[in-house]
Length: 74
Image (cartoon, rainbow, N blue to C red; front, side, top):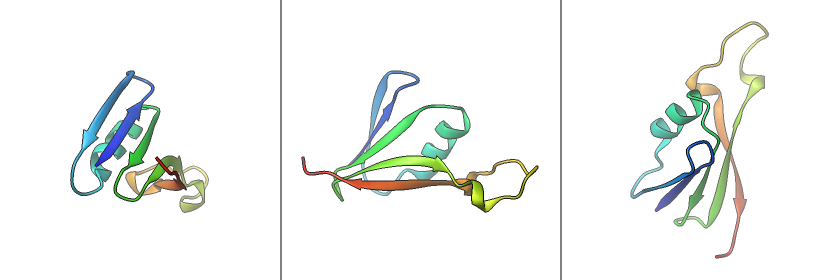
């Protein structure tokens, strides 16, 4: 299970199954401040915009978002 903590809306959302990448990208593109907890891998996933993947002057796209994982022991 993935738990998405959204500081912008003050909500938590649970996702079962595969990583909800498209849903998360939509949240990020709409300026939501989120982190993701994975109960499958015991990680906290923090999104960040990979600015190395586009050149100066280009606009960001869905492919620029990536997640950095931090291990946690519940």
